[in-house]
Image (cartoon, rainbow, N blue to C red; front, top):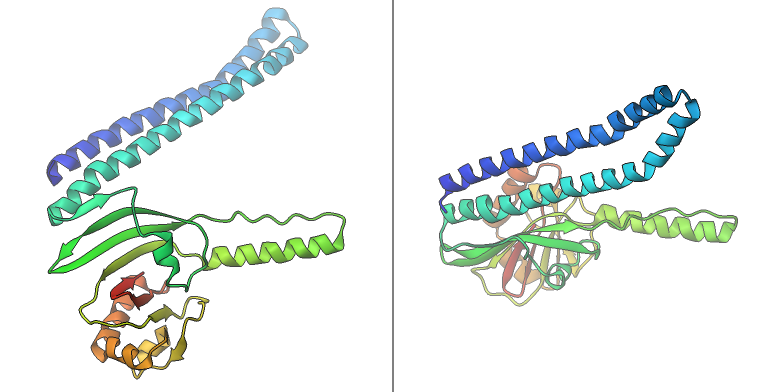
Length: 273
């Protein structure tokens, strides 16, 4: 399927999804408002009794809950179906329109082990998806999304002061981990220079973990935005040339803004995220 066919198919699927949502919205209003109110009034006037209308509403509640849950479930299923269709049809066609040799897997992505080796983000659980891989101008690459799965920390307080203090500490720790967790795009590609060390270029917007020794580079603009940690200072300067540092800084300014970007050199690969 080419990109034009994918656009038409996606537009058709959007209309089907909208019609389904309108239907479920109508059924929701019908079950939530019209039927119980109308039934209560009918019971009151037909039986001439206020208790009759109250009895009708009480009897209707279980039916209402079942209908509401079924309606919500169908709406969620429609949304998931559209998301899957969008990725498998439109996104895949758009990627192949750029380069037929690029591959796309909506359910794959960077591994937890590979990303955690970088070590500057909280080691929380995340979901990897939307993997695009291939070779561009002789360089193998993979691009994917890493979506953080929140801890959903809760502060549980009781009668014990000691347990309350412990609960507050755990809550603060889990909340801090969520704030430090990463969600975004991750690019991994071959690097044209050979190296054996590990060098991390961490955005100053992050409360990073420290890997190796901190190295001060010669570019002041670069130092204002990034911190460099390495286990080999000579190789770090070999990798981070003035031209490379300037390009990384310009990428951050153009695309990331206040969010910041980071990079890593390890295992003969360059990782940008």
